[in-house]
Length: 168
Length: 304
Image 1 (cartoon, rainbow over the protein chains, first blue to last red):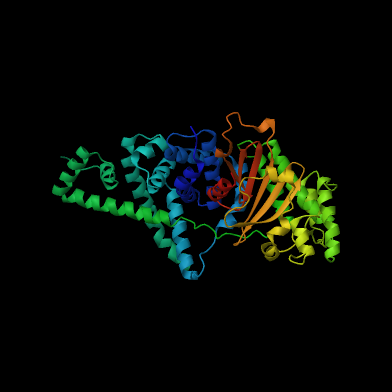
Image 2: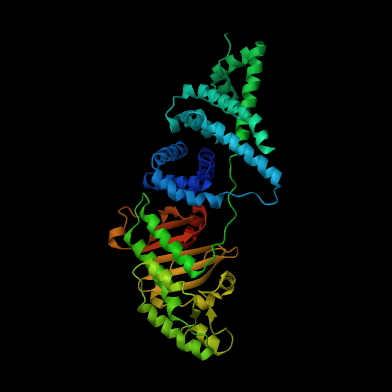
């Protein structure tokens, strides 16, 4: 089977990088993971690309988490990607960053499975695809999402009080 | 019916229930204020989560212009070679050789050509450049050597002049074209203004090895270095993004068993630069630039 890599990129690259950026908080790292994922797709063309690509990307992320050596070189890329949008007022930038940090902190409180399911759903995956990408049974996904959404919002709103103190 | 559980409520929110289950859940919600309220909450939660996750998105950084000083270019090329060796997919020997020759090409040109003279000087220097390119006496064994030779305080000027007997040369003689252009050691602005003609020093043999399409939409070929068996061509776009294409004969060792030639692109990234490789008609192509891989593949497709 021939693999139309161009089409694969067009259809899934943006979404994959977005998901990985949300997951890692590091766009440079997300880009690299996405590239490795597509490289694997070239080596072994998947029949059902979307769940396959996201599953591979999440696996790579887990593998990478166990390999501190690779992280070192990725740190270089982080600086390049972090930037403040032009013309943004310092206050707006500050609030945006504050929100971002709180969302990240809340996301970190979720179990890995809950987090993955939440992020995949946010990318428009239906439950069948989430099931294929995570190995979770389809019947468990509604419950998982209910728990993950509630937890994320709970932790996020808990952080609301403390941050204002820091601002003053 | 008993109350609808949280999982089912979220399945309803996400429109994931089958028709039967959906009808049953909706019938219950219509008659149970408590569950109807929980459904509204679940809907709001899903929306709020989506919004919050959106705050994590980092906008793509604006395209950066990599200052094309030779030292920087060599450093990048060298870094790419070493880091790509660590990649999970195979980096084949010819590609490495090609990268090394790219380095050699830069080093050689900067190190040898120091002319600053008039038309006559330019004419004389032209064959010297071309001839030495066939015998790269300063061929470094590693990129580091090349980088050192380039980073000398007094970076020499490189002159690219038309080949003796070429159309460009006769134009120079007739006064219809500028005799020579300083290129490699110049800043970006000079690269952008360098006439394409000055770079088109291509032998007939090499011309036969070129891709069918020699230009990339939106890019201007600004420099071409031809070494034995390997051609390196640099393109630049109006926004300053640069691409490098290296063409070398495909060795027996790297021929893919199921070669479907140019249909198969291999993509890798390192140091913020993407590399696309493919094979076509016995030649191996490596296209590299600070572009998203999909853009690079699009451009590679133009060269097929």
